[in-house]
Length: 571
Image 1 (cartoon, one colour):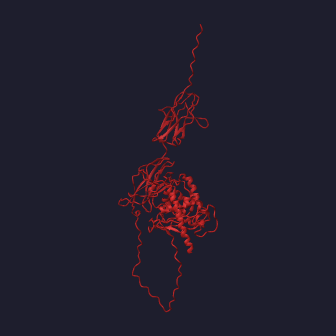
Image 2: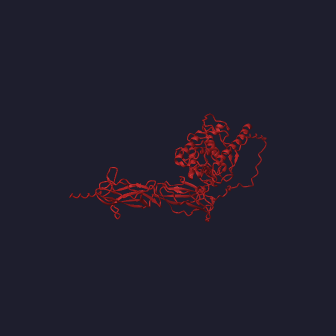
Image 3: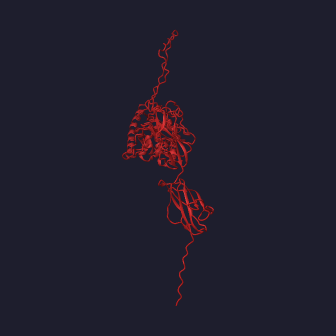
């Protein structure tokens, strides 16, 4: 046993050195100033606006729960499959391998993110690295074929005793603890984060944090929020730090990421090894405590039959009926939420809202409450999301008690919906904000050519009418439009003579509906034809938003050349 323990110590020292070199190489690839900010968000910019991620909860997905601090083995992983019996702890092939179902879940999640958020460039190896430090790959692959863990994976209760203080937010639904929250599942989500980040990764209709498919997909979406591009070192660092805000955590995950990128192999479910060391409440490494030695109780000495039991003296201290007190948190002092100056929330379909929801947490006396988590949820029949594609966002109030939600991105569905703000961990009334998505509109239409549009009776116009739509000087794409051949500028009713369009069957049509500008705001109308009526006619094009343009059309007989004068008779 002593020899095995000595080997582990020597191996740990060697892997620490290798991982330190790997992290140093990764960090060296960053340019100056590419370090993450103190909230795990993007690096600070020179802009005046604070980014949503800079206001995110520093507890991240896990509430800064403990994690495994073991570093990768010294030797490179074997890329070839190794299938066999469970290996003992310290077996490099087993430690380097990833259980089959767990590995499948990581790859499936990364594949889905490539379609859902291609700009994120999420590698499956990152999910594997986080899964390694969070739960030792679901406790060495202790999962069934559906991906459910054979028993719940729970972190310690976050009661402020060496860890963060997060009072219960789910009434024990996920962690079985109705007093404090605990990180749950193979990717260690705290319940308040899982409530909005949870996903159904295996298609069974449930979002279960103790299912590796669900947890891996949720972790992928969590890492890809805020438009991060994980192929860049700065965004990669920011995403990892947002998961657990610790530099040591970042270094450990980057070490495993580099290790898995060099190759790994599949091992049978349940045959993986569990790491040895966990971080303490300060993010530092601490060895896993050994179980106490088994002590056999000594046999009770037999008393002579004549002995009588001694009477127990009465207790002079009455038992306490007062439950132990728990430290108050800023959340406990919040009495209500107030609007913090949110302007009217309107946007056209497909556009970003220019205004953001802003909420202030206050005490009963109206004082600001800082460091309180506010959850913003989009409610209603809408495809509008927050930046990053999520419908829920949690933001911590600043020193003035204000939390600003991420920007809203309108979808294509028009109408009104609600953004609801609540205090996480506090049962008080929420605050609702009404937002409206209007149809795409244009305020200006112009022709793209100044060529005169003319035609002979019974012929067709050589040039097609083409216009460009703008709104506030910007391209107005996907804007609905109508084109009508009208009687005159003063009489916009449809004309019954003169130029016309043709439908698919070649029949005369003088009003076209269902038209739409393209991505450049351009609308090109079908060919125009003329009947036998000559004269000047008018085509009117209108769009949503009130833009209108009248286009003049002329139908005239072709000019005939005058005959040359007759020659004079010869003398």
